[in-house]
Length: 141
Image (cartoon, rainbow, N blue to C red; front, side):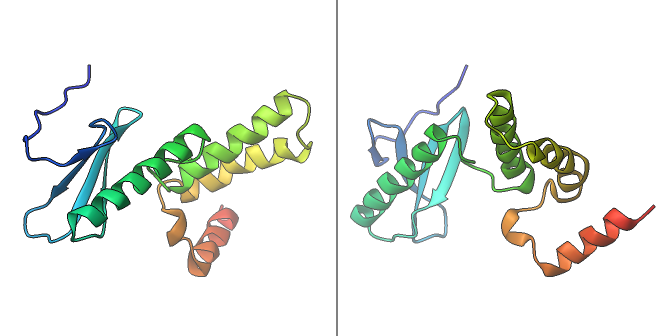
């Protein structure tokens, strides 16, 4: 059971109350909050004016819903989440008889090497230096 806190009557909402706008203490920009797949999502609208924040909130919410409907990572951009999406896509194609034979090897590499090393790291944090550490990790006994 999801418990939704009682809203202040002055809380700006949109999309039939699905999306709420609020300001954090000591912040001048509006924050956007909504629930997706049972998880709370809070994102900065990066807007100081309420009307601009409402437009940004609508766009942010619809973008997250688009990602959800299309099986894309919604909230996390950690390597393990992106790898799970790739793995599931390759497995589905293999199960349907349309995947490449090399997908079996790719899935093994994802499970045995990539996720154990990069799992909790944000994809945007992977750089050349980290790839060098990965290469050394693979060669270590």
